[in-house]
Image (cartoon, rainbow, N blue to C red; front, side):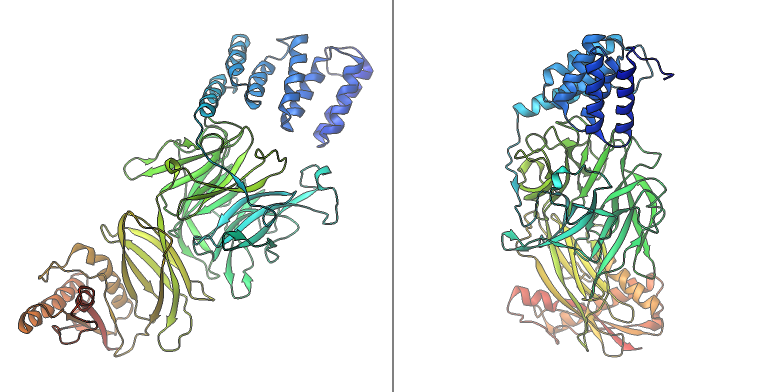
Length: 635
């Protein structure tokens, strides 16, 4: 017994050291029993009270922690000055917000260690925020999702497809499936593991959950994110063969036989450090995740990575990794990022920003000029003194799903839903879904889909259809106009456009069945995103996005000769419309040649109103007749 203690009883010291050993071996209840025995021998054993306080803190028994700290401080208030700080934190954790600042001021008075990482100002600010939040609650009513989703086990990390019809979530299941008294088990890696479960919507309710057998193993799988169309899944696995660190992010995609064999995303997303909790943007371009790697703002930070290509097996690979910066990441821990389908609102949990408890829910909006804004706490009573994590919000923006162990007097984590208050809602989005087929055989096709903003050409969505089904689904935030381009090698592309006004909703999504024609003589399609000024052959700038796709098509197929055909409605004389259609077709050819396409690949012709495709007696019909077509003349 080389260490010096505040008491002399050998039996008390032996019991204390047994407690230390039990605690280090993850046996907190056994450690508490040894500490009680030590205190029974020596009532003034201050080290025993301090260790007892640490154990109660680790187990979130904050009232018991306060009791132990009170007895330690009564014996000697300056024996271990950080205990004063811990008392202030414990007062915060039990909702006694008025008592936090006095304890922090006492700590500040006695603290002589100027290099201490303990920050009393942070806890004073948190307590002030929590007190004010309770006085000014944001009205919500969390509703437990019920026995179809929840059980006596922990359920958390919900993830949704964009149409809201599929939910995949994580469940902490016992390693021994035959154990009867689950609540008696200590929650550790020896007794439990994380598995995936799925449920599908049935009207307003959810069907009974089912284990995702193809992905679950005897190790941990959890903290997953679905792509908008529900066909890609990024998830966290720890201790899996092929991993790079303690926990890594893995990828699987839906196939005709179920989920594919998972692949590790590898560098630069995964490192020898801890990576977890992915969230994938609806534009198909960016993965957000949490990592403990160095170079961040705090302990665990939110990072992002952009897709730069795909491996042969279809797994995406990523470019440079970026930290989300000081307006998102604090000196503490951030987790459970969720980028809403609007790609402008990021929800996440943090214990480093002022809030109600250990992990509170926050959101940040992205400003085009100033980037991500400082986070806003989602308020009380959504945030409690316990952990709130894993918030996801429907595409419509009206419903949120999250997990909590601080609601309805439950001691296990359950998944809840609630109506999102107006002031914390994301930008509404709508979605377009459908299938891509071969025009001749009607076989489903895997094709590339790109959506550009017509106003500035910015790429808004970059995704692919599901190889096994030809399905696609993409989301479009309200308030802009978009050009759609669907491409597959060996085929002519398909184009369309969408005007998603500020009142766009998701109740009536557009459904498209797209048929692609192989590149061969006689095949043609309409360039729906080529626009001219009224009664003019001057190309509008919004046409550049579409025409650049034509450039790419002709560059990849240099032996192909195409005809650009101009068509008009029947307003005006035949001669006027004939000349207008010819000039418009020529304007398109001139643009293509300005981009390097040789004149030998191009022909143009004007057809006036001689080949209508709709009724010229309606405005809608006339709009369809005013068109530019591309036709293959020679392969």
